[in-house]
Image (cartoon, rainbow, N blue to C red; front, side, top):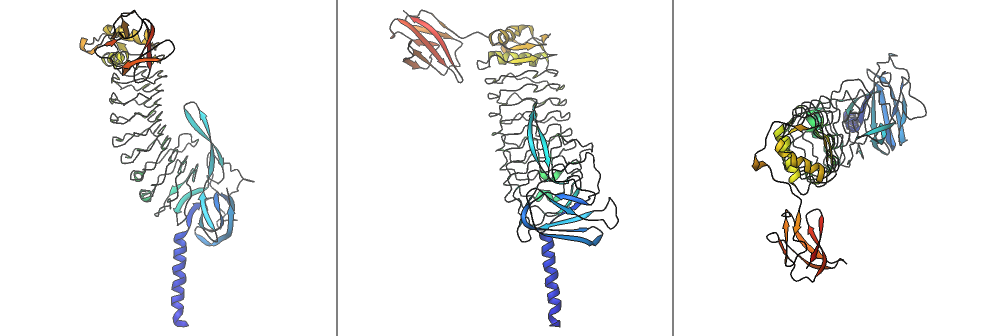
Length: 518
């Protein structure tokens, strides 16, 4: 028996080691005074010797010990909680507000599924979403994630939201195999800096990254610290929502150019107010992108080439480069044919001087203050107005608003007037400048028309070269003839005398012309 004793001791020690590796371990300072304080939605607020632990699971185990005084410890078995459980540490060995405690969570006789410090009601405000929090845990008292263990997490939504003093020191990785949602995971954590172990995280199943690191609406006065280079290697191939992901992280400036964003539809506010961000994004496949409003809002240093981006599905570009005072990249190749909102797009982008003459504004409804207070010179502004006026797909009833201090060439006044008088645009704040566009840069803008009317054998068309086909119908709507316009001529000789409607079919609309057949 004595010979077997060392083996028994070894096996017991080994089992303890394995158990320790399986635990989810966090460090808490229950006496920590923070500003702002966190009010927990619980039967009462925890005192300086207590914490509300925001766990979700059945029959799991919580063990704790005071750091430096391991004999001061406790164990809670068969814990079942949906939102929270109170851990009372009692009087600390030092009876000090600086006392810290190691809290270890394991599956025990059941399963521990999730840690979630709060849940957010998303309040739509002017041009942004504001989360209103219901807090479940003592977010002002947790200070460290020491080990992830083998917990099979079901979600990381709001896992450590508003944890004001949180740091990550764990060298292992969380088991994210079943996780699709990491939204708000580290929201409002100003002191959080990340750790090298983050580069090993398996994020391949995650679809929702929204607000993950955002500090945009944090009320904390603590300077933001997050500038981790360890998230650039993440597998984001399943991602669909990256809105607000890094918004407000004032010092973040790391490469994420290798991310697979091919399925992402929402990047609204993604880097908004990331005051230091200026990294290349030219590897990104943005073919699924629909919403990018406020994406680079108020980043004074951002100036990267994005002209190769696929923006064919984007509908909202409001405030994208608002306040980007260094930005001056050509965007003339962007497909904006589905964009409905582009208001305040480049407002106060004081270095910007490019033309948008190739843009197809077929769907545009709001462009107010789009280019106010930019550096767009007389030549580029004039070419832009000419390009828009000469494009038959340019939308009607668009409010461009103030374009101050833009100036336009005197010889393109007709094109500007065409947008205002024929397209019903609102353009204010600009004035005639000293530049002059070459004749080759100007096309005469004329309304499409047909003649003669009445017609006997042929109808001739003018300025309808963009038409895809024509149709002729009678007063009852009955189709009589259709085809392609050849050499600006439509033969009507076979029609009986009477009144008809000629329909010109373009990519986005049908134009009707009444005519009489003699």
